[in-house]
Length: 523
Image 1 (tube, rainbow, N blue to C red):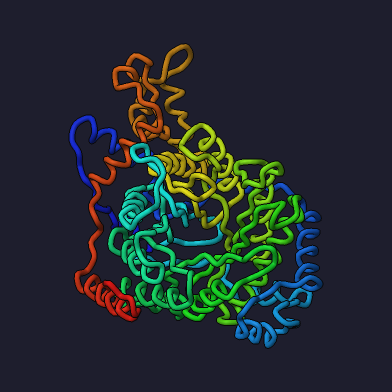
Image 2 (image 1 turned 30 degrees about the vertical axis):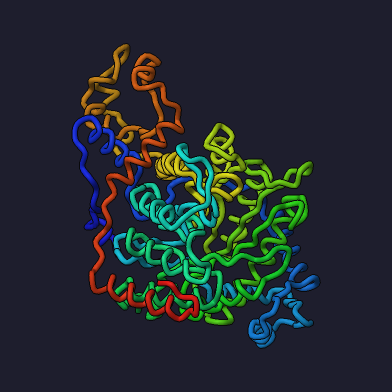
């Protein structure tokens, strides 16, 4: 895989002059590796005793309180056969049952295959994968303000994610294209991921049959080369988000999609969606115990459906304002939950998903910046393996911001540098430079500086570090205005990755047939 990754060069527009230099600098600033392999230690907030306490409490929830699996007799039958106790739709798991089943078969790491093998990502272990935000029905930009998202917006964000070297993944429902019928829009979203990017992407979870379409279209995208030579199992081509309906409930829609993906050996991220104080206790320890219990229950079902199917322990836990009930982001308590859940996932032996660049701000302002930074930094320090919502998130996830996307992608590039750690090679130690310069002189002209100056420090493509006079001469633009210019330029210079015409034709035929299956079809 390494040779394939090195061989991939990508296609980029080549502007000239000053713009070309800035583009080159931005490309160097954000690593183009297919995913991050962290080189710095993990940050822990709990001792062994503390983690054991939360694990014990999660087992108590599973055994005594139970988890509801609603309107899905098949799932109940599978869980009963696996050893759980069923009381109506309430499922109680004997102590240790879930942990034993998951640790017996769930992979500690797995590869998600992209249609371009150089873009394959490795999920788990010391690896971190960045994906854009997910699920917003609205978009916002400086020119139009806030409006409903369309399929054109969806395509734009796929293109921006493809062009962003700091993002490794195309994501899923980057925004909800409300101009298309609900029962058909998944075809257009999946096709956009395949046509306008060659990075890995996520499947649809809004109905089991849409999950089946996702698997079928992913197989076409990979040229039907779907057997993994390393494992002998079907290639994992998709990773998909299965949310628990917290507190302690799974609904039939999510369960149906989970079973489709598990049977096809596709990865599922089992994520309790929690606003602490409303959907879990107000405490960090209580929220972590409930999150672990819900995730264990969902991952257990996936393993009973198909032992060895990739699963990811997900955690999305935010606090709420106790005055208004509105969700809040970037606060200390969710960061503590994140650190705790990351450690619990490592102890369980499965990959972990959380984090992103979350904020409650409605626009790309100072609140958006500091709340997003206070989410992304703990994400990276905790060792999250799959990071959803890295770029674009506004308004508690209700809006996808064009300018915010560019600002977040810049921050993600900085995290590449942070996670790479300290270079202790002879060049990193720089002893030759220290010997050459000696006391009382400067390092600007020495050989080491000249050899390293272009890549010595992360260079933000958006931040303005010029003098105030130069900044005023350039139009006195603030960060949001510069980001507005940047996303427009990125889209103007976008070039689609190559797609085999035969694959494209097969995809379009599949979509046409699928849409025509609906009585109200208007393909």
